[in-house]
Length: 371
Image (cartoon, rainbow, N blue to C red; front, side, top):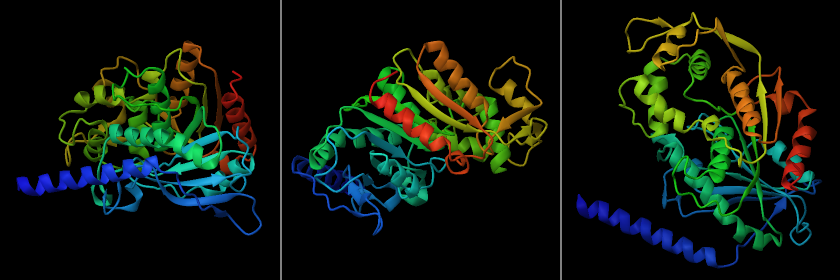
């Protein structure tokens, strides 16, 4: 058994060394038009790290790969073109870099260079079970790859805008705020390129809050044990962590609102509001056990607050996440642009066309350094 693990470790080391050697060579790009009439060019399935299919990645969705969207052919991209890194959503368990392609092409038409990345997912069946720390390490690896990419494109990437939808928005906020206060998470991320601004499209901001639990369980219809087992794995507490109260400290650590400080980068956020989940709804703390009102979650997290009659939601994430983030940003004096729209989870950019120019304008403004 030892020889088996040793062989796997040696193989992984060899792959990593081989990839490191590749990173010293010029990156070869072969962009193709997004469509026959489009000026946007696309490169698919580029590697930013050694975890590829057959080399540590059992599934393509967890390989260290990304797609690249360019505003013009190689050699014609302005040296100062703004750069946007997108982190996809999917409840930290699903999804991939492939979408939403129309959004990426829209950004490229506005002059942005856009990278959409895959990352480690918390799903045993799709390449291994990974925690938030592993996902953030992948984001950091992608950012560390940017100088090589810049050289291949013939542009400068002195700063980057990072953003994502849902789970991707949560990870983008964590990564951006960790760069301003690395001791908060203590993950020793390199942050090779500074984050100029961060964008969250319906990203959870306080995953330790009872409001987040109510909105999430109300949307997914999951039993309490399954819901918290997933977050035990994501936070690093483990699937067999014990009580929800014991898990809260781990979830608070990975809640972006708790990482905001005066040095945090400007933040752009979109959140939806389409309904509410009554706190009279019930859950079973123990599988098959007695059911209790959602309102009891407040006691379970040690809160003395009186639970509201209902929690506002976009269908998945509580509107409290929007309020908590914007209140914390305002208190810290961090510039931000925020919208709360009547739309479902991650549907605002598509159902509210006016939000796209609003987003593009704010991304450019913050990337240019005008706060």
